Amino acid sequence: MNHVTVQLFARARDLAGSDRVTVEWSPGMTVADLRHSLGEAYPRLKALLEHSAVAVDNEYADDFVPLPPDAELALLPPVSGG
Image (cartoon, rainbow, N blue to C red):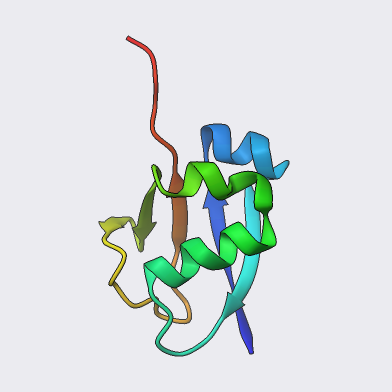
């Protein structure tokens, strides 16, 4: 099985303790699968995942979007403030 690296920003970075994390990747994996894998591997991120955007190759992606094996991935939590 291969792995993908996800760049984390803001609160996600704080909760994971790193600006990048790695999860297992398999053919046919979607953004929804990525969210699930991140929640399993990094339980502190679980509550934040459902409210965060995911970017695949610098484009926001819905949960059904498949992940290419060499994709650039980012998790972007909601921003608060005014």
